[in-house]
Image (spheres, rainbow, N blue to C red):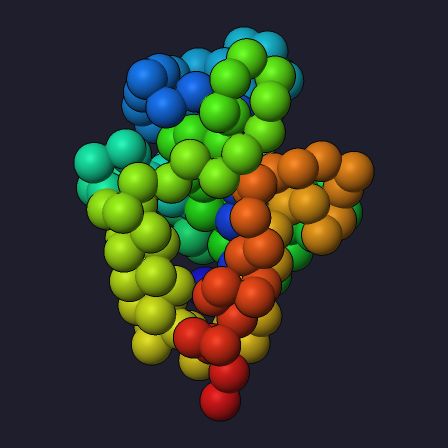
Length: 140
């Protein structure tokens, strides 16, 4: 198993009425980006259900130059209107994200940091401050 030390949170860049699936994101990543698989390890649907993407023992493809030792979690949403970024997480998604971060910390005590994609790229993603919201859950 890879040594994991950080969780990086993303959003799909979709409006609240637009749901998607792991299969659809995988298809986009493979066909559009030319990747071998979906870039994220987990996708959190609008209803708060958590779905596995790329296996955890395989390095993700979610944050350029920051995939080694990280877990990529993506929630469906992130746009309040076409091309207008905003925190669109449902209450169920907020709970699921918090629970997933806590569970990953239990399974991988070496995880000590939570970041957002925006911390490593000039993007709004995930449209909220993931480190401020979830970072306390992984501190020893």
